[in-house]
Image (cartoon, rainbow, N blue to C red; front, top):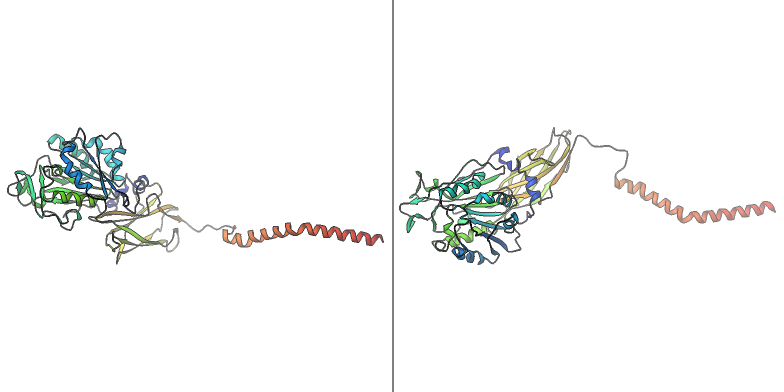
Length: 431
């Protein structure tokens, strides 16, 4: 399996033009379900319009299969006039579309806000060009030609019959024995242009007898998955026709759909960051030891400890570039630790984020969206003649209030007694 990652500072360039704080501030979803509301039905939107290569009657079996999931509900969308038409779905299926780039801005925003997307190109060289205008930004390019198979095929040699040509540890391909992909356009990974951290990897590849342009077997990628640091996920299939009524009953195509929707809906697994400890939220950067210790635990959907790729990200407010990127040390049993050294940094307010990722599960970020953990960096402690609130309350405010109470309570009696004494003295002197 090929995993495309970007190492070091560049690896964390989910922060370049589309910075982590900006992504999460814009998102309306919650980290606890990482993009999907687990207690509600998952809304699966499927676009079937005038610019798709099929009509609704061609995918009734697909709709029935997804609706068979008690926690899912399919909504057929016939027009996309604004982003809200896509954003109303948790999982959005946009396959066989002749002009995908027409909706690229909406799809970008959907992925940036944690949405889950399934795409597959239509047939035809000109159609693939428009399709690639969108996918190339994420580092994926589809071939204009179809894969053929000289031995392993169903009916025609352009309907590829696949057996065990995938990673069985993937939850998407769990318990799958055979898939049929008609008219499949293979894809390849290229340099991406979008400034967002993501991980790409093959889902399905060809048999040894599957060929295109001198490539075969595992070198011929027929489907791929993508996980974005925004929590968005995208599955790119070389064949939309495998979902049509005429093909969905071939092999395990229908069961593949169930696995796919479950994975995209975070029903298969998801990560969670727990027991976060940050040693201080105020650092004197000129002190001998200006460090912050961060400890946390990562678990899966069942609460089982998980070993992941875990990093600490520190930003200044409103900055799109990270001030510090640090790999956390795995201590075992799902526990991680990191020490952040702020020596030499200027005084400011910085935001602390924890970013973890595991292949086939995706990304998870701490803290909750829109609630960054802030740390104050200062050159030296500020001294003041004024006491703190507790000291002022105990030794100034309370005694002062007590004095005022006594004064108000007893001053009238004092004046009355003083007047009585003066009257007695005057009578004494007069006599």
